[in-house]
Image 1 (tube, protein in one colour):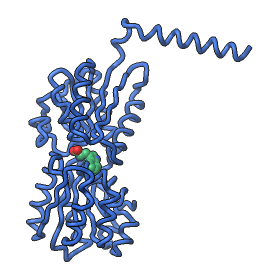
Image 2: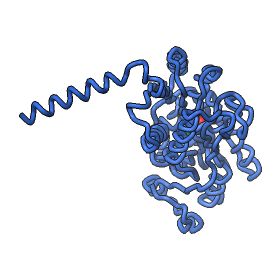
Image 3: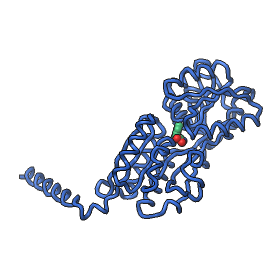
Image 4: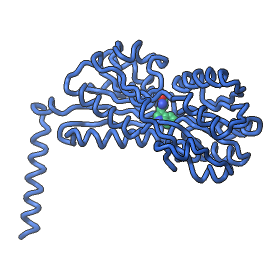
Length: 324
Ligand code: TRP
């Protein structure tokens, strides 16, 4: 009898749900397309934090319909996802990482775009101004504070003279961060050697080259390097070369040290901006939110041990020091 009751209730609920999905009420269901450039620790963290915050803001399967696509780090895949989104009459598109945002930029003539973790939105041509977005695209930014990372590198290695730079020059985000770090290294009298990659499979040999001839290696928050951290850090550690990186996730995945932001906070802020747009706020009135304060110092303890280095008191005693 009880089972029958439950069954009846379930059937009734099903009827109610299907009754609600009719065209008359569907206008209240928002449609959001999410495009993530690829899988790596940081982008997955951002997506999860975004999802959690959207739920906290009251979105659920009754009032929002997500289409989530992952570009698998492939330019063609990203472009075809953008084409797919074009036919879907979306209320908002959320794009995680620079190459994903660039792929969907052409949809902005019809659909507001909230980008997430784009290091240099102006350099990536998503807006002409951070304070007054003019292309129907805004969002969160994670420009790497390269000066602070290099300062820490010099505290750990006061005799640092040569720095290898490892990145994908096809990533607009990395081009800007590398330009900034080169300027700062030049000021500090540190010589640089570059090794660029175009895909994940090239990271290991590029690291081998740099680690064999430099006192240390630096990568910004480069998506290609971030998704090859286990091989990259292994190659650096094999020659006891400190590998400074541009994101906490890259430290977690084997890199030595960074000074950086909390990406969970960035993911949540992306959701808050998306919520505002869904509630009718104009993109042009939402400045890009740049994350560059409240930075922590992240150090991978296993890598620290492997390198046989000692951290100076300036890092060890800092309240912002986080062991990973
Ligand atoms: N900032 C990167 C971009 O502009 C995306 C990104 C976020 C990232 N977190 C990261 C890249 C961590 C490498 C590591 O595309």
